[in-house]
Length: 465
Image (cartoon, rainbow, N blue to C red):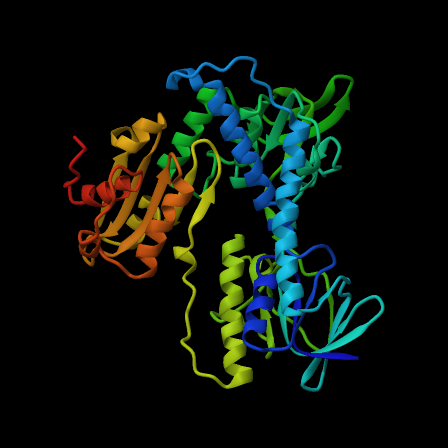
């Protein structure tokens, strides 16, 4: 029986980061991952999707190149090559992480964990053929796409966010069921590649958890480009017909399409049998404390299986904090205890226009604080955005009027997913409005919109009427 100090179950952006950090701490660790290191994010989600985002951006810019004084004739998109490029990027990144594991001699067991049992002060991890022993467990089993009672994915007609990335030919038409982050991203990607796209969303707004004004702006932008949106609408049933797939909507309309993407959220996965111990769940998610500890001593849980924030960067940060706690425990070292503030984790949506947000929205802040300050600055008044010919959108900042603490921010527009990191750094360092006044923002850059949005909270933005 092979024995380890720590066993990490799951090799996604939580699990593999945990294994590397524990190795850096000289803690004997094994990872169980039945597929490839990197999990959904690197192999079937964030990374391959963003490679498609770039293609959509380039193709879109070529088609509108005349406004830059550039004439390009006979533009075409070879999706087979796009698909191959996506796979090459995934392979490069994943093989790079695998190389780190090889160089650091971190063992990866490509086996399915069927059962975990507790035996005295240790845990036994049972796979199909082997049993392993560990003092401490980190559960990082991730999540999977949700389905609807009346609509299931078949990976041919009704696709999941995973199987759509295996599609080697662009459909003429795509209906996206679900107007959340994943649904809107795929809608934006494929529409810019020339696919006719419609979104069916049960709730009254796209990206319903975002700031209302941001949601409205995204809807406006999508409609302008030709994406049809059905809000407050559900799909009652679907059937295969001669010309493709027919969907019957709750508003009485019928849509005919070539492919359907079912994108109605994700759910935590933990389907491993436990013996001689019980974990506490909140519905499907494993409950944890602020150091990622479960109710069972020496068992931690990180990533989507905790449903705290189903983002890869959340999983990675949870992994680091869990490893710090294990380091203190096994090595008896005193290092700073950091508490993860889930409100201050940035959200990024790679639509056209991009969206980045963090902290509280204006409406959320009004419900908690008596007085708030709201600053807003449009990209249309920013020199860099004008030069890029990409001026749709704005930066909004939300501030506590009494303490001048930054409560949140929302960005919709060019490079919003990069710009939000600046505000995340400010919030993470507890910067207040007066601290931001001491910062010099370079000119001409898009980041000046952040400066002016903060200035606008006190009606002092120079370039805003």
